[in-house]
Image (tube, rainbow, N blue to C red; front, side, top):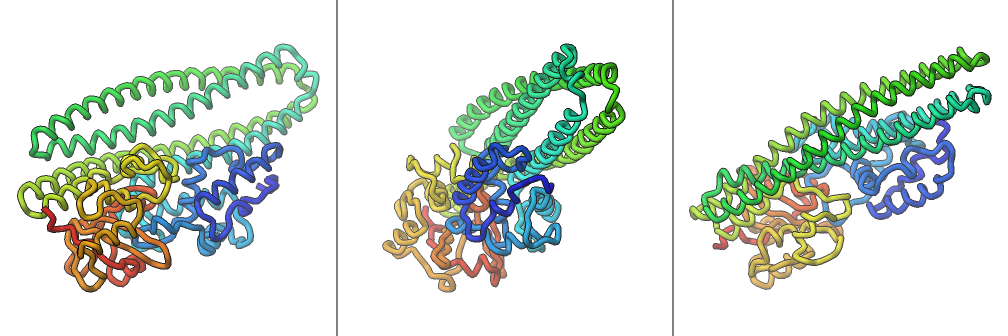
Length: 476
């Protein structure tokens, strides 16, 4: 896209944090406001989409993300620039290929991978697919705007001044704008409904497996509320889908009527106009095929996300029951139950934010890294470390009570708290299980902006960051 005057690599610099990346995006967006050949990434994307763009660029291989140390590296930039064999330039198409690379190599499944890319959860895959859809749409839209401008220049002033042409052109523009607005609203409703469905699957599975009647009744009431919410989304989606079908038909008919007017009035550039119209139609067809393919992948991933949520609910109930049966300490069992029930929860915009993230903070209104807040919330402000907003707070509280063990001096058990301290950064999570070979499986908050399972194999980069354990597994 040589018409773009500000190269995309002006946005990306090594060492950038998420906030610096978003701030730079806003600066460039303002600079590009009046550019006729504006890049699709300037002045077009919402802040949460820009935040996820940062995730995709910064997503380098590691066994667990360090929640306090997310920056773009030189290797991230080199990887992105390499897609077109031009190490000095990065384009929107490069980013689009990066989206597809992550999706294809991970196949949108959670768990360790053998590639140099990290594994991603279905929730992350869904985010990337929606953003890939947005990227493809906006690149095509920019190209289409350029073609339509060229088409407009081919049409003579005699035709443009004709009242019939002017009225039909305005009607077409209005219908197209309304159609795009309805499509955006539909996409938003579908994503909101998916979140509600995942929450319902999580709670439904827990209700089916929980033994406590009081908790089962509470979950039943919550499920009724969620079902009502989902019914509302379904109603809205049905209305929006009907509106989109109607508007698609209207746009098609208006385009045909407008072309008839041009055919009737234009003589000088008739052949060139037809050629330009054919180019626009071909661009529309290619985009439609691309979006259909992405929509198919979205449907598959949504089903994976619902299955993950169902499993999270079942695991949550299993840990609660294990504590009641005396298999592990009740406090540790409840913490694991709380953690497992949250798997799949995501930040709202990648800024350590969102209603579900706020509840982990126990009333603290800030946007700091939330891995320690998540562990504290899972343990419900226990007597060992209470509610802590920092990893150091958890560690020091445990040390004061003689419950902290350095790495290598203790074999962790389910329910223990993992502490990572490396190069000034820190992270934490709850141990879910330990394999005979020493591999550690955890549930963590703020791991790739979400609650997810993470695996640490002995000798791996992530394992080397573990500095110790808070011994919580046997607490009753």
